[in-house]
Length: 215
Image (cartoon, helix red, strand yellow):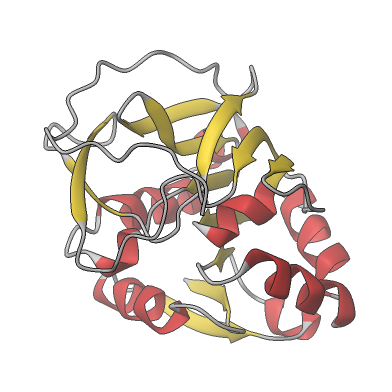
């Protein structure tokens, strides 16, 4: 299975390594033509405004929206989650608007890559490893989306049909759970195309809590 990764900035190489571990073939995406033959696309971390400008200048903005409309999966992490949201705050900016949610940029402050936290997840009985680096906070999730994981009472992993967004960096941990779920989405037409309503998840996060703050 070929999975595209937007290869403009950020940690796209770490996503590629994770995909190879799971038997998928990563494809670096820098043009709309690079999406050809890809079953899914990952929008990695980085700087969302820089990435958005690149998408618009290189014709990828509309190409990705078409890619998603065709039922192919799109997975955004950190800045990628910001690009997927329908509404972005702090400050406001345009986005692809593929997932009905409101995100608050840099909500967790300026953590470094060594900060690993654990949140509650529907994907596993074990706590999910989460790395937050200037991460956004999801303030609102639309009725059609499902919260798959949360940290400190806030949604951290959200899915609506073929669109998946994480405020953290699963590719910077040893935990393959989130990428495994994305690949399963791509191989399971029922799960991929069926949006589910959000349900509350009990908060079992670690004792150390990241408090939202401006940066």
